[in-house]
Image 1 (tube, rainbow over the protein chains, first blue to last red):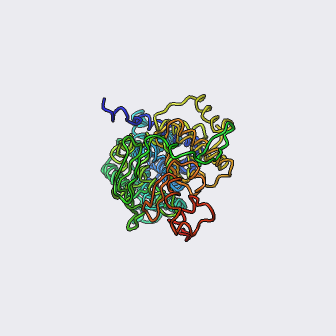
Image 2 (image 1 turned 180 degrees about the vertical axis):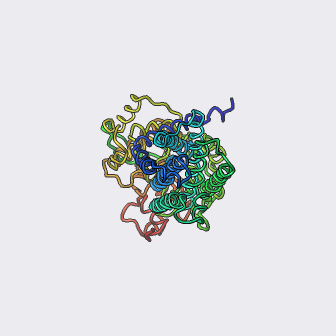
Image 3 (image 1 turned 90 degrees about the horizontal axis):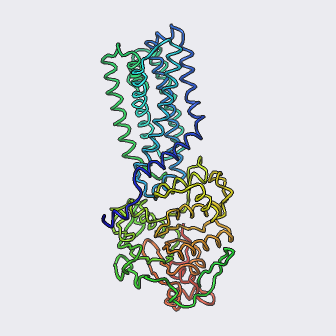
Length: 256
Length: 294
């Protein structure tokens, strides 16, 4: 063993475990936020339980997909972005950065915890949604829902990362996050249903909420999987690459 | 002057008997303005030609110095002189434009993880995750240094700094003095070879300040080296083995407080500001000027 190896710092596994445990404890303290994030999706599922409303969105699978997409957008765009912006402003990241923890582990731990939250949210919404809309997905479909929850969550997390990359002030991030969430919800509900006309229906279809909703609908009705689902998958990946790229490229660890 | 800790934890300031009281392995010469000279073998920290810039603004300009093992080294300077930027470069928070920083022989940029695992840091403004309790914060930071602590060990560490009854409180509920003591305890959770303290006594009441200096003395006795910044010349004179004065990003001088006073006591700039016997503060103001910095 060389002298450098003998003096090596802590292993990445130990560092990541410590960070993830702390992030999990923070998540537990904020568990009420997850419950609040479930309110809108559950309200949507309950209010569209009538067949007429369901048809205007393209079917029960799309309603469930839209509900999950709303939940993922709320936890990621508001929850994740705001926590990162506030911790940055308070100097929490600076304190972590002077430890041997590689910087990528600090952010990856937070993203991993957020992914777990997204999985819980997606599972709860899909169980309630399929019960209310009388669908019986297979175990395989449930697994696919979880897979899409990771992908869909990544879409909204990358948008959140782009926000905290481009905007340093926590107050501004909070304001933008709320406006963006409101726009996505309106676009998803009114645009998707066709109430705003064909142009806005197209915009809504390829918006982050639209493509994530389509993917969930696709895995809940695999027989109807078509080119729109495949393109939605590709568009989701583009959102992730572009937004995460912006968020990582311009992210600053200090608010000043 | 040297600091001596009493049994009750209070700190007594008394005149330094002789310059031979300085710890072993202190470099005999310090390089100024980027010219490396006389770096002692076995120094815990060696900085050579450090330049830190933020865009067109150069905050640290060719600073070189080294710190011996078991030494308390004070970095003094007016506001905006480059103290925190120098510390930030050592801590890895900013990337120097040029220069080298070796911690225990390790280049802090090439071997960041290994170097950071050998240093403890107390930042000027410390903030931990608001949702975590003190016990959870200690466990997190111990883990980040690869140290596994049991609940009993955490309780023992909290007892050492008089926080035994506060383990389930969040950090923000502690008083300023308690927060500072906890921050210091977290900075030394892994028994670092070098401790970096950025204005550790800022905002503390006299009791908390004395307790903190006592703790710093104790850490030195246990073999640690300490690099600190402070605006308190009296404390620097009492506690530091050597002090360096930095201004406008350049290192002006680095000596033992006693030698610094001796060397500059007849400097007209120092005589002009001195009232009676020349103090470290007189030398500091004489060398850096009387105008107020922002």
